[in-house]
Amino acid sequence: MSEGHRSRFAVALSRRRFIAGGACLPFAVASGTASSSPLPTLRFGLTPVFLNNDIQLLDALKAYLEVATGHSVELVTRRTYQEVTSLLVSGQLDAAWICGYPYIQYRNELELVAIPAWNGKPYYQSYLIVAADRDAETILDLRGDIHAFSDPDSNSGFLVTRTLMFEHGLDPETFFRKTLFTYGHRNVIRAVASNLAQSGSVDGYVWEVMLELEPELVSQTRVLRRSQWLGFPPIATSRKMAGSAKTGALQKALVEMAASPQGREVLDLLRLTGFEMPQEKAFDGIADMVARLGGVL
Image (cartoon, rainbow, N blue to C red; front, side, top):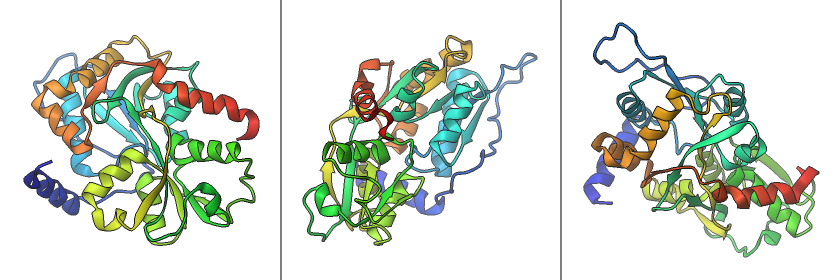
């Protein structure tokens, strides 16, 4: 990324600060040509899988989707994955950007719409992080830590680490001195950087992007372990909404985003290279972890 681009984005972030999740954000419908028969509103849910809730990013996403789909768009944010997933499964959302773990949990009730591509591939990793100057090499060195998880329904921020503990025969009730949920990957990084927690489980995509945007913060942590490559958090819809005109318009808008100057602006803010058509096989690794843990969680 050019220095000029980095500078402009850093200024935008400093001007439009992070907004804590927990409520539906009100947005005005973008102006356009009046219609005697306006299309129904497309309700699109966002979870903390998002890098952050920066106003510039949300405005750009909303504006692009409205132009590309022809629908007015309502962006619905919630603090936890469970809240958004519940709205999605019940049909109260047309689609949502969720995590691979809840997608596998509700696979019989959901269908994929699109998968984001990071560095040209629909995959990411979970990072186990510690303080930058800490002398630790494996998860076994983290015994007795206060450990920060992102969300109990997060793949990278919970499931991967719990699976790793299971593989090592570690009791999650006694191995860590205490665990906490930050309900945001950025917050996991902050907790470890400030020593509120001695270790944490975080989305590798978020960690890498935040290292670029906030190097002073993220450089206070280091990656102890990277997981295998797993399916990037997808955009999904409920089975009852699958095949609808709105869902089809959304899928087309996402897959064609990289071909539009307005769409590329959104992708640049997200540090993504585009969106791809659904690939069920991308989530086989997450499905395998869920199956292996069975009733342990």
